[in-house]
Image 1: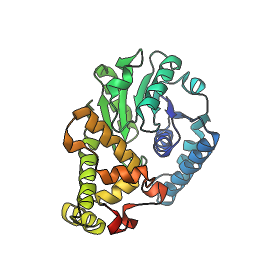
Image 2: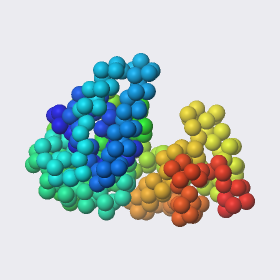
Image 3: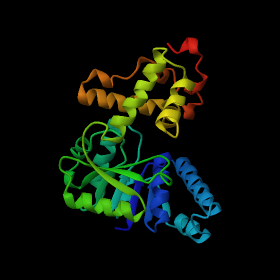
Image 4: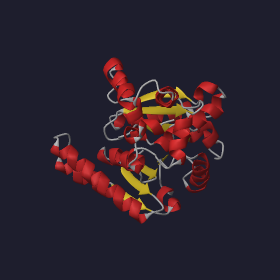
Length: 287
């Protein structure tokens, strides 16, 4: 398998395209916006350049990787010859279901359809296609060129052969695949988002301030960044979306999103991407 199509040219999509192209795969990066595609190529070029500066890759690999990527705004054209399609669109169930219906109609019958979803059921996504056995989750971590873990999620109907193929492809791009089954949040976000949500509750209830909460987790638990800083980096809207998936999936109050998280998202305070992070919320306004 050497023909890869990535749907979505945002942070995750351009990172996935970067990695596959760096390891010799021919990649079509697809997005509805030419501007988004131009920005993605510029980001990939910049990130490859940093790798050259750090001595991690040669200038030749940099140039070859760029030449391995083409762009396309037509999904039908982007996937017509694909052997693997990786969807990396926004974490929105309706959008993903719409995309997978279109992919199923346009991609070759034996093409594997993968989703980079961080929480949405692979079984549900597969259910809108005529090829549920060929649908799988490939949850890359951000930033994709740096983080080595890929969480491989088997849907209820995913064939063992498809899972084995994806595991080997993941190894071929120097990532570490870890296989899990399809339950809300999988493993990464079932644990991570619950911790982040609890940290927000701790702030909401006045147990500690941002510096204290994050400092305790960095210094006492050896986390590279505290949970509130991490939430800002991920995006509070993404955190809220995942918490809602967990709450809906398990029906357990421990997964209920913190009211402070809900209010911040409703106010458009989404973390780093909106320029409004936990660190600048006045203490008297946090409740």
